[in-house]
Length: 352
Ligand code: NAD
Ligand code: GLY
Image (tube, rainbow, N blue to C red; front, side, top):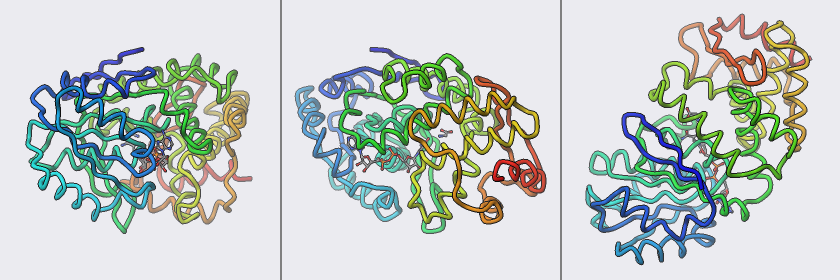
């Protein structure tokens, strides 16, 4: 078991290890000490797999428990369900000193996090991520959100949890494609700041050491969150590969998974960086090899013109300027501000 302390506007531990779910109740008592009741917010798949273990543990610890179950999938992360959760919390008489337990992937974590941030102007939340993506990224750092009909994650808040419990055993039941999606984000952390992590992933492939990899990703994210909790500077490094990835997701009408889109985005920015001399051709080739080791795709199926048109609507654009995350070598990336014309020239060689 490994414990990683995050010291942002709120300090909290991220616990990484096996067999943690059965101790959820004790953890809630320790980190939300005034709670007398916990509201578990989860999805139907995860509830069927792990809901009883969590509820039994909470009851054993002497707390009351209630559960709100969402249909699984991104479509549930919407305003209607958000309001339904708030009404549920009120109907269950959840008070300001009680706790929410977000059990599931990034969808449950994001919507439960936003509910926790806003219900009674903020109540304690324990994040219990059960996908690799949620364990290495979304459960840590306090970004919470729901989607609007106009776009993804358009309403939300920065709201840090009281505790994150990453039970690595829950990854055993993940469908392979969901697991591999999360691997793209883990590779991202290696490229951003940790060559040893990158090499471990490249060597071991999907059989990597989970506790080591998840812990290293969380430590990297923790360091960025502690430097820039509100995403005004260095935290934006976490967007490596995301500008082109978001465009491809949108072009596919969201049938392309986020992890696969990020993999292609990372490969495209690496190729573009090699073409303009920011990184070596060898660095770009190592990145592409690592993605292929996991069976992740490294080329978009869309013409660059189509991609560029969608990239022009990117949320990160300010005026005529966008910040791109560009690799210089494995373990070092920079944030480069460029005009939209410069972005076009930068990426176009990567699509040839
Ligand atoms: P998800 O929550 O939809 O989970 C993917 C699928 O896996 C779902 O069908 C779920 O039911 C199933 N599942 C979850 N855990 C399981 C388990 N242990 N065994 C079997 N099935 C399981 O998706 P995700 O990929 O975890 O998260 C994506 C979401 O995260 C997006 O909404 C994205 O915007 C958000 N996100 C947020 C942040 C952040 O910083 N807040 C960062 C990255 C992504
Ligand atoms: N997932 C990006 C961030 O937390 O900033």
